[in-house]
Each structure stands twice: as structure tokens, then as C-alpha cells.
Image (cartoon, rainbow, N blue to C red; front, side):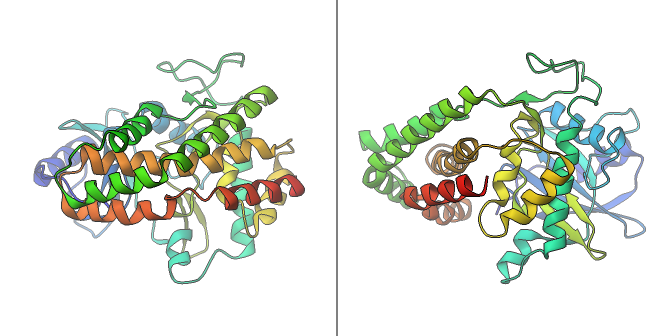
Length: 347
């Protein structure tokens, strides 16, 4: 859940109308996502779009989605619309706003919340689409603002993934705040510091194991591909005709294919894996999957901890972030290791 900002939405609507030559009538805040603000934009005919405002989306990520759909011909990619000037976003305060087609349907996460899931055919389609995306790596045109990945032919590239924790310093800031026992102003901060103090050793052990998996992954020197970067259940949508749509390309980067496939590990993973390998034969590695399994937990602790201690100013947002963090304190090391062992058998 995301709490809306206080900026003038009429101003945003007018800017979108001018940039995209539209006649939007309303903007309705959609309290979804974590690090961006989303709005359903409706025009005079009732047509709908999705406007996404963020401070953290690299321009190259938007360019990747646009190229995968237009040059790669991957219809399942939900790419940003272009302004009249051919841009993929506009400025609004300190944010960049992109406009997307609005997808009518249910995400895999929506189905999970009511005890349902994608059918086998939809899961197989996920594997097929990821294979197509990864296979486009050496065929898409280079983006002039972003260098190609080192050691590859010229091509479109985003950030290059590293086997290292993004924003590691933020995790240490959370851990150090708990160790110092600094006084905090609200009850969520106090609860967080108590919980981090209690589980600090377990978090550090998790980080140590994560770094070990990262060293193993780096030593494999596997080829990197264009990845979506966050192919989680909330970003996979089936429309009324059961067509798959892959949204939210904020984390697109050059990285190992396991970075995308890890979101499907667990029950029924082999459906996705078989479809993927049918369309793109590849050698996949349990240690790389394990690296990303551990990274998810550490990133959640870092992200929610940082928000509660240093960023949030809204009690409702604090409550949501605190509740979301409970799943990861303490880190479920045993379950993660069981998952890695199961992957090793499958692969």
C-alpha cells in the first residue's frame, strides 16, 4: 500500500493532456506499489490509462520495455506510451511520470489473495515470455544514454546486475540504529529497533550466507541477459481473454536469467522452467537462484526498516510497512535452504 503525496493532481492532469494530446478528465490514486505513486487516468470517452510517478525509475528501464514491445515484438510487455515529442516520461515536481495502457484483469497476486492461482497454461506462458525477453538481449538496438554490458556486443542495456546487495549501506544504517539504541519518536520506530536488536545476529548470518552465494554465483561467469528484474506475482496480469501482461519495468537490467525465474520457484516451478527451456535452452544454477532468494529477504528488511526509521512521515504508511516486515523477522534461513536444495535436485 502506498499513501498518496500532496502535490496538485490538476496540474499533473493538465501536463499529461498537453504532453500526450489527451483529454483526461480524472486522476484517481491507486494505493498499490511500494516506491511509486500510481493513478488511474480516465478520458472523456471513459478510456483508461495508468499514470506512474516515481523518483527511482531509470530512463533506460522505460526504453527497454518500449524496445521489447516495438522492436522485439513481445506483445505481453506493457510499455510506456510516447509523448508527442517521443519521450517516455514527463517531469512533475521531483518525479518522472510515465503513462501506460490500463490493463483490465487480475494479477497472480490478486488471485493468491482469494486462494486461487494461474492455471498451468498461464504459468507456462510466463516461462515462454521470459525466454523471449532473455533471447532479445543481443538483437535490440543500443540505448545512447546507457553503455552496453562489459564483454558483450553493442546492444540495449540497463543497469548491470552485481552479485552484491543494492543499497547495502541502508541495511547497515538500520542495524546500527538498533545497536546504538537511539531514541525514536513513534511506536513503529521503537518496535522496529526492538525487533532488529532481537534478530540482529540472525540478519548478519543471513547476510554472510548471501555474500557466500554471491561469490559462488560470480565465479560461474554465466552469460547475462536483459531481465525484467521483478517478475513477481503482482506484475503478472491476466486479462478477461486470459492474455498475459508483464507490467512494472522499473527494475529492468542486464543480469542472469535466474533473476527473473526465481519469482516462480517453489510449487509448480517446473511448469515455468520446462516452458522456458523449451523456448530458450540454458544452463541454470541453484546458487544463483539461492542468491536471489536471500536477496529478497535482506532487501525487504532494508527497505521497510529504512522507511520506518528515516523516510515515513505518515502513520498509516508506517503501520503498513511494519506489518509487511513481520514476515522477514527473523529471516527464515531454514526454509530458504530447503528451497535451494529442492532447486538443486530439479536442475
